[in-house]
Length: 295
Length: 245
Image (cartoon, rainbow over the protein chains, first blue to last red):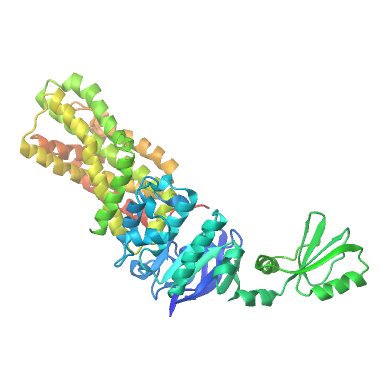
């Protein structure tokens, strides 16, 4: 069963094309990571799927209906930005307010317990710590017993411990059969949680596959060395210089090393490493732009 | 509890936690009572009643234009607002709740005016007139609520504050709220019937005295309600939260 779908969706803001004919499908029980650098169009896509904005072209669907129709949002859980909680209201009051919108909400005590906020029920949200506010914000997505939860950058700014606690809550929801669409620019987060990754860059879907497949598909290796001058080398998808070293991302490390040797490049301290998903996805996004000139 | 009441309760809680907001909308009309009505018309029962009714209209205007104009615009700046639009409900409960809370605040903001009138002036109304007056307040809240909503949904908060103030004073003075029914300067007499404030204050006068409202003022009030409703509806529909170009 398909819970959320975007078909050839475009969205423009004035002259800027934020999304360009994007396709995305989230089925029941899936945990999908939406990955991309800031400004790639992740939040715009999410805003379209939860009914906050209208697409300029194409079609979005939520639980079989138009997301702008309230009935379509009955099985949807969304998290507000942590800074957006009404500061003067108490934790319990905020939960009650959101609960009132759903036919069968999770009881307040149970929800707050699950997110470690049971002792804060009488506190005004403005007086909570950053981590507590974030936990409350995420908890609100689960109040209505949703089938699909959409989390836009849920752990930005959290320390490691708090992040792992939230991940456990998300995994628990998924283990019970819930679907999650999670946007992040933390690759660690997507690798830790998601089964499927959708990579977005420049408003387009660049890749949509399993975490392993995305890595395998690009198969990018990082060849790192110290050298003063480099000729233009074939097969290099990105070049960066940092701390006196040159880092070359390539799809064929063996051939690159052979080329370096046959070209007689004076290099030293050669390293060849597999890339993280971050580097893999930077390579895909870079491939979408004009090729970078060698530094 | 119906959702509209849930939303009303939410707004009232926010207001109660920062009570200065209530003082703000009650202060202007109360101060105008003390400085203008009490010393100049306080001893004349008819004049004091008319002037008090005008100050009540003043209070309704300021409460509604500012709390909706500025309040809605500020809420739209907050990430909490788009979040509530993802909850499974249409605009009706949100809007009704906000208006119910606004009406409560409107009544609260005129308490000082009424108390000052009862204690410090000769203004007198019968129990029936008092009840009619309460009802008339709800009726004349309509155009100013719509005006506030149009401002709040159309403009960013910093612009909304300025526009609300710029609109507020000409409407109050031009509508003749600071002069009696017949002793306004000539140019105000000429323009007043075309402003929503005049029709509004005439309704309050009609409720609490034996004043007979003018046809032109009432027709124009109706026209204003239609125009402002269209403007508020347009502003609400084009709103998608904060917008940057």
